[in-house]
Image 1 (cartoon, rainbow, N blue to C red):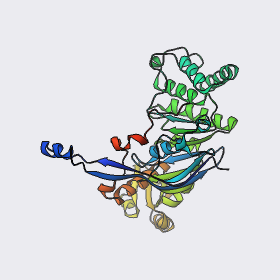
Image 2 (cartoon, rainbow, N blue to C red):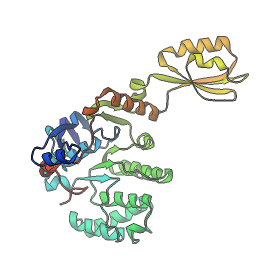
Image 3 (tube, rainbow, N blue to C red):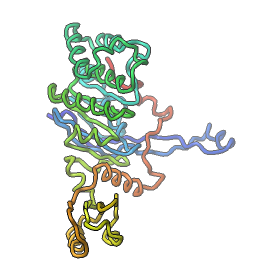
Image 4 (spheres, one colour):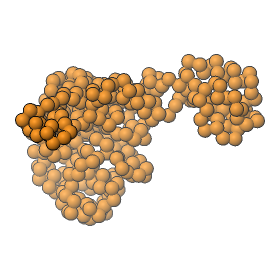
Length: 354
C-alpha cells in the first residue's frame, strides 16, 4: 500500500485585485474584484514505503501548497489524496501522530528556551512514554551530533544547529512519513552535508518515507533516486534522477585538451566554455556529438577528450526557465496569501499537532 497516493490534486486561490489610486481603492471596499490563481493543477503520484523522493520546482511552482494539502494544513479545491491510509484534511488524530512536516523557514522550537524544553513539550503533545522519549532523544542527538547543545537556548544556536534541533523535534514521535520543505535553506556546505548524512542514515535504519523539496541539487543527489518536477502547478516529470538529463538535456559537454592551445575557430562547432590554456569545454547539441567530434579530430591535434552530460542543476534550471517563458504573465502561479474568503481553509501553524 502506498504511503502517499494523490489523484488530480488541485488548489485554486481567489485573490483580491487591488487597483492603484485612492478612488479605485475606495471603490474596492464595496466592489471587490478577484482573479483565480491555480497554484496546483491535477497533480497525481504515488510514493511507496521507505522511498526518499525529491519534489522540485521553481519558486511559486506549487511545491509548498502540495505539501500543505498532503499534511492537511489546507483543503484542496478538487482531487483526492490518501496519506498513510487517511484523508489528510480530515485531520484525524491517528493521522497526525504518524507524520511530521518540517519547513526550513518556520520555527517550531521556543526561541528563548533550551531545545530540550521544547522536546518535553512535544512529549506531552504526542503522549510519548518517558522511557521511549529519553531513548529517542539520546539516539537522535547522537545521530545529529548535538548532544551537548540541547540545554542551550535556541536563540544562541547557529542556523545549522537550530535546523538539527528542528529535525529532532519532528522525529521524536517516530513518524512514518517526513515531509521536508527546504530543510537546508541558508545552511553552509558542511551543515548541509551533515543533515543529508543524518537523514540518509535515519531512512536506512528506520525505513521512514520522505518527501523533500529543495533548491540545492546536492540535497537531491545525496538523498533521492526518484524525482517529481512541478512547474506552474503541473507535474511535468516523475521518474529516476538519472532520467532528467536524458529527457530534458538537449546538449552534451565535450571536454578537449589540445596540443597547441585552444584554436580560435573552435566556436564554429558549439558554445565554448571554460577555455583556458590547452583545455576547453564545448557545449553542443546532443544529436551532433559524433559529427562535431569527427570535424574537430580532422582539423586539430587533440591529446585527450571526453563527452559528458551537463551538470544536473543546469538542466533543471533550463527546465524551469523554459516553463516560465511558456506561461503568460497573467497565468503565473504564485504562492499568494489568501484573503479572508480563504481563511476557513487555512490551519495556522507549521505542523499539525494533537
